[in-house]
Length: 331
Image 1 (cartoon, rainbow, N blue to C red):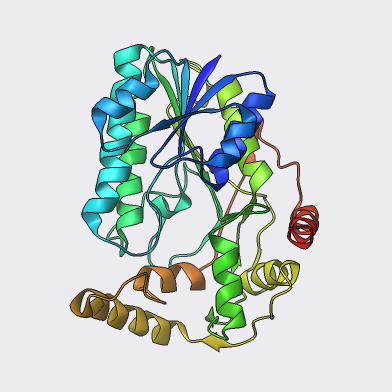
Image 2 (cartoon, rainbow, N blue to C red; image 1 turned 90 degrees about the vertical axis):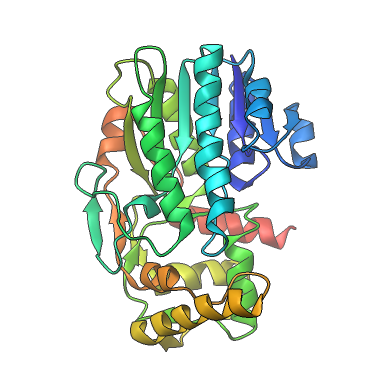
């Protein structure tokens, strides 16, 4: 089967491309840049921007299914840049599906679409946890718009599904772990609150597996069609425990220091004001959205995903940490 993966050069994107090739599919990746890591896999790389409708339509011509994984992520940046990538880009993917008669769309969403300030979630599902409101971050706002559009597009001709993997980590991660290590080594890492709030995380192979399970089960009228699912390892742990375990795997210093939520939130508000005023580059060290995320309990039930797409995490957190440690040791 011919499959297009958007953002195939990214962390999850490469895992998707690798797994799809191993399953015998003809895979193409739509990226803004070129990724040498995809060459040994035989993945065709198509250059373009998600916001360019003609480029997306051209890339999707002749494919049978799309894994729409590409997005602009982060806790900071101009709203219009997030909107162009996440909303306009997703609409272009939907238009491509309709224009070319593509029957399956697997969309990579995020639990952030349900974020509600400091409201904790324990064992929630897509049926019990509503969409968030008054987001303090353009990422969550635009991903919510995009997810709703994907699910609304589900019909007899196009089967759609949205997966919400939580904090993906593992070998090959160039975002989460490097940032944690850098800040830990510089002594700039703090837990917001006491660090005992429990959160879900997802090992990279499990995140990819959920997408393959969705692909296998997705069809018009299927139980999973037109629905969203939280995805994780199903092993919620205290932020303090999982962060220090990741740092230990990387041989980085452990974190013990904390900052009260109110202080972190106030610092975030100040940073959000100073960064555009002083035209500072990069992301601020704290934002209000980040303070809320880091201090709040968020973990979800895997039962709906297991029931409807057969998802069951195959790699435990303990095994994943061992693999991560080994990969970094041999790097």
